[in-house]
Image (cartoon, rainbow, N blue to C red; front, top):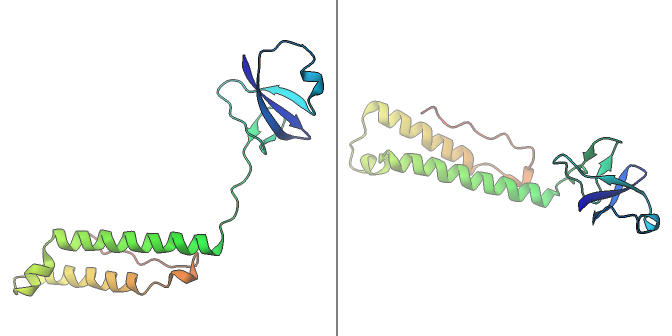
Length: 136
């Protein structure tokens, strides 16, 4: 038993499992039968150049998909920044006046970074210039 691609005009039109027995089955196929061997992978819609199977290109993303991805990225970056700030306990220390000069400067840089993230308009995806977080 083996896996074979049915190839017509350089395109895979079907993938089948076949025992290799010539019982007339092959004569009914519309295309050339190519064995898929050596760990190769092929699927319907893939191209075949005589030696290699190549998947079709990824379809372009819609504007809505790009906006959704940008929104998720924005939320993840905000969450990561908040986690970093909270792990440093800067909000609590600031509330009771216990931030040192260096800590206060770092806290302000991270707050500026959060402000920049919040200002991102994800509807402009994919043309977004993401702010760079402060060095840690």
